[in-house]
Length: 191
Image (cartoon, rainbow, N blue to C red; front, side, top):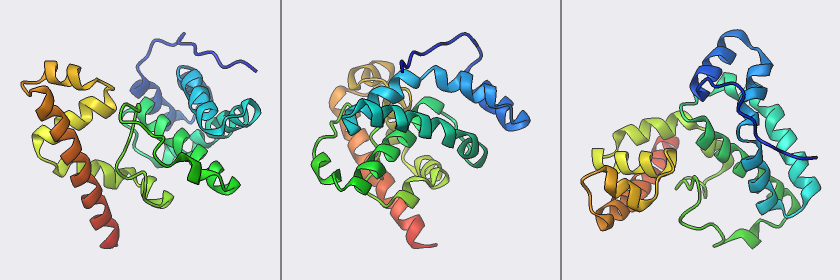
């Protein structure tokens, strides 16, 4: 099985998501997913280290999107999909008892590294809490986090697009991640 992305539908991700939520037309999710299927497959292969398991994971993730995209308010589909795929792979590894091999293997330059990754899965699924906490951060931290994780810009690119020096950008991202984690933990403790 080959996973090749196709972008025949030129509409932005957000437009396809809105149309899907209005119509329930599963073909729209197929068109949207096909844009990133190669990335999802690569991620699954990286974590699961088995082609068949990665292919199965891609199909399971795709099938889960129909319900999840009706339940969640997704603003940045590519980053959200990355998180869903990564969480799926980590859960598969936990079931197989191999998740301890991953400690320390996640690097700073991952496409989407959230401070809530160490938390239980039910917490990571709470995207509303994440967005609410993100909005409560200081403007400089919020701006840097959004550019770094959601727009997938490098530290240098964030520094160039803002007035912040490179060391400030790294500091804002580090402190923003810590503050985001504290806020999310507090929200879940209050429930």
